[in-house]
Length: 132
Image (cartoon, rainbow, N blue to C red; front, top):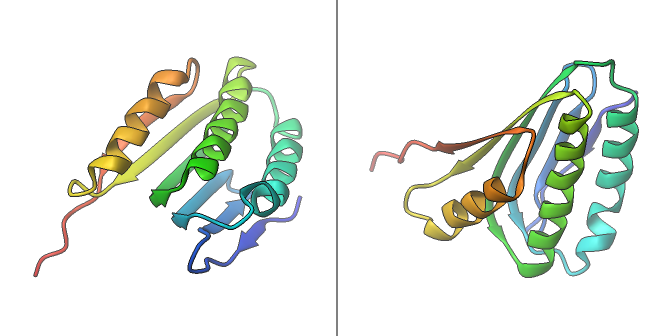
């Protein structure tokens, strides 16, 4: 299976999905004009990827989203729900939600997402503050 790479723009995050190493990364701000259109290829890839995994495979997901608008928040919840369903079916999935300690909105968003998920491991990871 091919990897999925989408470069970040001012309003959309970088997507780096590595099928061979089973590492998925979304990094940046997410407020595309049409979230459904932007994330369509992401969901298509994810469904194919999850469908092709061996039983008891493990997947690491790194999410470092600096900002989500309301439509991106809904899309992210759907993304996490797909991963949670795969975890219920036996795939070991760890989601690392990276947040800046100065960005309460992103922390609260991660906490809310974590409460919604049943089967995957959802870890809140504080990113180190940059020294000035």
